[in-house]
Amino acid sequence: MPSSRAPQPSIPMQGTASTQRTFLLLLAFTALLYVVNFHINDIWTENESFYADAVRVMLQKGDFLNITYNGEPRFVKPPLTYWLMAASASVFGLNEFALRLPIVVMAFWTVLLTWSMARMLYGDKAALYALAMQAIGIQFIAGKQYASPEIPLAFFFTLTLWLFLKSEKSGNRWYSTAAAAALGLTVLTKGFPYFIVIGGIIITYITVYARFNAKNIFRRIWSHRPLSGALIAVAIGMSWILAMYLSYGSEYLKVLSNETVERAFSYNGNLLKDLFFYPEVILWSFFPYSLVFYFALIGTFLQPSRLRNIALPMAWFTVMLVIFTASKGKIPTYFIQAHPAMALLTAAWMSTSPAPSNKALALLWNTAFILPAVIGVALSVAMVQVFSFHPAFYAIPVIALILMLAPYTRSLYYAPFIGTFSALFIFSTALMPQLETRRPIDSLGRAVVNENQIPGNIPIHVENGDLYNVPFYTGRKAFYYASTADMPLQSTPLLALVKTTNLPDSLRQYGIWSGDIYTARSSESRLMIFIRYHLNAQKGDMSGFTNFTAIYRKANNKEPADTN
Image (tube, helix red, strand yellow):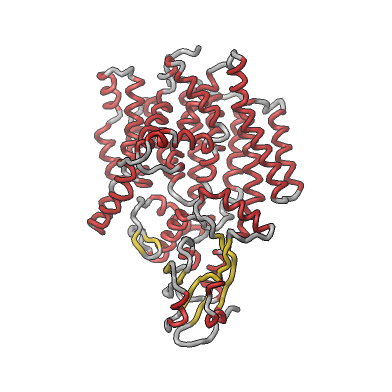
């Protein structure tokens, strides 16, 4: 049984040549997976559409403080993610690549921060395991594909605790000051409840590490300069709230109460159901290492002597689980910020615990690694078969199997990474481009903005209320749930997107674009449903899609729009 004494700051950091090669290989595979085709899919989901259109208006007006979506104030979330996207778009242009680039970069750095924390706490071997787990987690991978605040939040959240740990290990309290600034940026990304979340993690960790001795707890907290740190964090994090209050007054306070206070601090749910919400989410969101995590978590509880050794990741995970289970709002993406903690805790167990001697436990332990690896390879083969990809793609799962069994890489602990990488790489390189044939809103935008050069002050009337990306791609305000019956009577310039079957005959001559738009679901959490409807469409069943026509009738005339 490993010693309960906490690791000292002087853990050796010199990795062997083999360790260094493994690190570079994992890092290269991660970088490849993160960058390949990350920009290929349109701005599609509701949340990403809000951020993309807000950035468009920011760059258009040069106003980076008053955030809007579709012409209306949008201050339900702090501005840092918007600003990062706008900075990128100002360099690379207003496109999917630029909007998602900061997200991908921050996802990659979150992986590196997790690796570095594991290295500081548990050594090189554990750091490699933590890197693999954090890099390949399914929900984290999905999050890096959308321009929304979840990944920036994970980055600043992890950065805050990384800086705190550096302060703990080095004794240099300037790291504590930097951690306070990072905490302010965390709040500036998602909201002031993260003062409570991260503060709770740090206090819980110190309490456990100080062996629940009140005097030692106070001394350790005080050594991190809490007063000056609090001033820095509040000055950065709450600056947005102050600015919005000065601009919008009670209107902003109402939004703040509805979107933050009530969702974070009120509760009116089913207790039994909510207790299992995030444990169930972890099973798929932290895949392919979720089974290993639960094995390590249960094993840790059965060996209390290990608690001080894993005090930081356990405090991190536990505080988040308690707070988010107790809160009213429950969304799977809220728990992405706990993934580094789960990777650290699991890596600590994997690097210090021998394989179980009990045959039944040994079978469970091995299955926790083998099953996800097999699932990854099986999904790789299934995608090539089901979606009729080029037979050359079969080489990817074959290579994955070879890597799992090769003498250099043969390790049960890396098998889930390799198998899942195989499936995700095929998904990114082959399936995502195919799915894009079912997302035509960008072509609508080109028809409106480039081909017909319709002035941006002319709004677009949209019959469907779920097409949130229309304002971004058409560069104008959208009026949703438009009535087609009233359209022929309008004398002002008319730009509209309506279901083709509902289009009045008198307006058909003004068509400038037509396409099949997915209307079954719009949420990113329903990706598998979208894929199913895509497969049906390949077979001729278009039940998940609706044909729309865009029309443009100029003011006070009946001349058809120029579609050339």
